[in-house]
Image 1: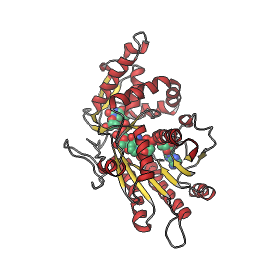
Image 2 (image 1 turned 135 degrees about the vertical axis):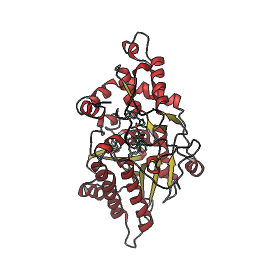
Image 3 (image 1 turned 60 degrees about the vertical axis):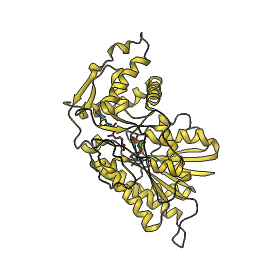
Image 4 (image 1 turned 180 degrees about the vertical axis):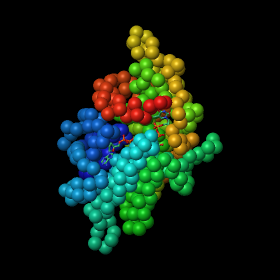
Length: 360
Ligand code: NAD
Ligand code: DAU
């Protein structure tokens, strides 16, 4: 039985990954979820798996070397799946330091702890071990021309403090692979959407605001392009890279689904109107009049688009969920989890929203 150490498993993608893995492998795997439970971590995301005998939650910060080394000392970890990070670009613009601490130093602690646990006396590593570093397409910078794409060979050119910290963490993983032949893979994925996403990100924020008849803030001219991938497809890609990815390789993961932000917002409005009952009181407040163009994000990258050719040809992964289907599944999930949304938007979220959108 393989033991997975998942970091950041109480966040959006990490929790979707854990659900996916237990649905697929049931009792044939063991997962230890290490999460500091920052504002983005929520144990409610793990309802249903948290009672399993083959699941363990450990509240720990990845920058806490002693706590992380203890987990490796007490468990024979086969795979590390490293999601834990500060993940929101807007927050990184306001407060970069924690991004450096968690994303760069935290990754160094994870790498060192795994290296220590997996090393053999001759400088090689125990058979079958792997560290999968989950990263982002934002490390490649920004594209302008339609028809151009990010490949694994595209030079790094991060612009935001968030993407700079993720690029730094990728470089550390690459350095460990080059220097020590440390067994790892890196995945660089495009924008995810789906259940359990915290409503600071565009899609859940727009769903939540529209349902509450609140303005829908669109940065700049609304024509920035992102390449959206349904989160379950990302979870599947990670599982496949762990099992089939060639060691030391990077794989780009993307949705073949480029959309301007304004398109996303209008699709959400139209889909909500289609899915809500006519007698639902929330329906009357939803229209395109809610769209409000606000001050642009500083240094806002214009366009991201991933070429997922390598992961398709080498591993056989490709995106399966069409956006029209994925957005309905996502909206349906938020309809069915009103309490989840109420819980995450109470308290600190209100303050975050007021500060972030003040004057916008
Ligand atoms: P998220 O913000 O929803 O979750 C991050 C999780 O990490 C939270 O549970 C949080 O509590 C935990 N965490 C934060 N700091 C920690 C620390 N110091 N120690 C331990 N745990 C800590 O993020 P997400 O959107 O699920 O992203 C997960 C990973 O995937 C990140 O590495 C991100 O860079 C990457 N990624 C995200 C996307 C996307 O569209 N969301 C796309 C590509 C790659
Ligand atoms: O590309 C992968 C990245 O996608 C991940 O690495 C990040 O962790 C993840 O947060 C996401 O980054 P983005 O900045 O692209 O996601 P966000 O949802 O914040 O914004 C998507 C686009 O929508 C972006 O162009 C900014 C815009 N936007 C966002 C918000 C929150 C708005 O126009 N209005 C908003 O209120």
